[in-house]
View 1: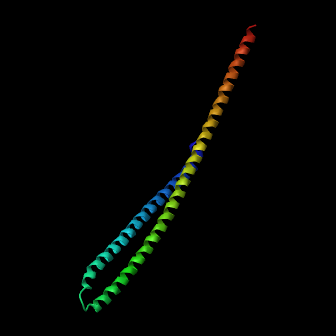
View 2: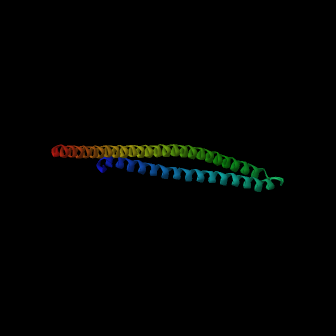
View 3: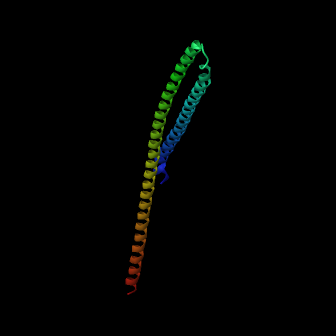
Length: 154
């Protein structure tokens, strides 16, 4: 029985290894997405603080050069925020692909397990049938022996 299941056991081991790799990859993608979200939140918070801090300085007269510097840096900060939003979107797509891959690997493992289960049931059924045939043959011989013994007495 073990020889019959050895290839399936190897297949199961391989499928489980691939599933575990897919699980690790999904975890890595989840961490990357969380880091990207944290970075985006940090940039947005920095921009809010920057705008609040410099809003007070613009109330003073004669701050035209300072206003230009403020707008230039604000534009670069906005570009950084937009870039980070693209990074977040890419991380979300990668996570979605990793989740899909993990689901496929889990389905493969489940399929191999089901195949093994069916093969074991088939082997057990064949064994039970062989055992039943042997018992039937033994019972038939015993009946013939009793019949033969009874006919030789007469």
